[in-house]
Length: 370
Image (tube, rainbow, N blue to C red):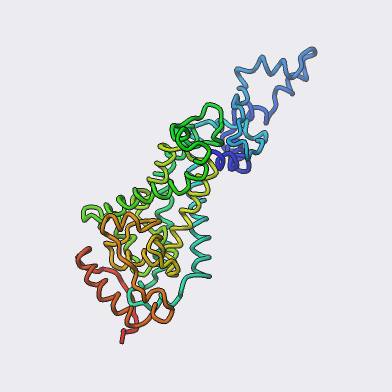
């Protein structure tokens, strides 16, 4: 995240903080009394006079630029040295990373969900008996309320990364960086880290997600996401804030336990957001016994207590919670057939009573199933 923050500082935040929180020296130089007074004293140059008034005027930032990565860096402008809050200020890092997390998360959500809705999502879903009245509007509203709060919980991990408390690395050969895992895998870790990250986070998310279905937690935290029985791509981030954050914890925990290359971290973080949209897009392409695709996740939304995994079906199979998607979902002519919808509705209505006690959703007017 330090690479992202460096770019954001260079192109946006440096000037913002220099304007909103200018340093004492910068504020003083706007009036520029040094030049004005020095002009009236023969034998005094501006530099000498400035040094003598240093305590009154204040001094420029002592912060020194060190690139976050040897592969990508941008030299800072003069604004980087003109704020009371240097780039190293923990207060500034909290504020900046919060804004980045909020805006970046919202940008990915709206971009990916909108593209998926336009080019992938099957609009026939609107006629499903369990599709809610004004559902997309409700999904977006829930997400817009949740993302800023989820960002609050997320930022401390990003600040810790930026301040060097994680095992994020630029290159395996970086001076002063070491980790026992390099002794085992060496340079091959560059490639192994990707599948290992997916397996590690998938395992933890499985148990966190399953735990959120415990009666103590479900109605308070996880039920808002299960409001969507037939989700659209816009339901992908429509969580209660604590629910959404708790399921993201494994992603943030990983670089504090294992080495993770900085750009791999950015790529994986972006992939996770996209994947979350994909498993809610209703396009059942991955009829795979391994991949937890949209069909598997639809089973979870319809029947509640199955398919808790995020990327694979491995932990559901080992935990006894795997449910194979109905084969009818993979054929266009039967996916939205009356028989399939009738079967889904009947079973869902039984499950919702078992899990929630009653179904308080508003489905609006739907055509009756024949």
